[in-house]
Length: 256
Image (cartoon, rainbow, N blue to C red):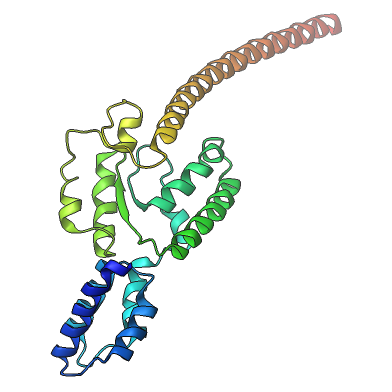
């Protein structure tokens, strides 16, 4: 909160005191202000409203802060890493910190080194979350769509149940809108809204797509060559066996 929010804050405290029929003197208001000053006024107001809905007694500063910290709490790095998409086909509901850390680890992911990628992601994610916490920056969840439509709904519904997005937001993606979405559009170039670092991801996904195509061609070429090699060995072995039979026949003739 900033100085201009003080009037609004006093109104919130006065209204809350009135509901609980308790007088909030200047000293009490000063303590609340000092302890809650780091949070945005909008978040403070919502925390007081949530307290009024579920508690019979006037709130303590620690109760309001606990309510605020739910909004400002990030997932652990291991849980966040487990949610990361493994290909352009998967959808994800993530935070800005998760998206930024994913971009840091993306090169290692495309190279197939998931152990190093996980470490890079965790280090970047934990640093970004610490910075966000120091700045009292709220956790904001956004949807990043993948190419496979069948994988979108489970991810969205899980995010709704976890309280990360509303059902109204999820409904915007079901059925899939005309726009190809972020990840799905990375291969088609039809993305209209790009989150932070998405231009970087867009370029990387194109590289990954081409690498996948090249890898598939190499695999097909290798299979074809393996077939030719096996056929050549089979012919060579047949010739060798034929030569052995001829030698055996000559030895039998000479023996008689």
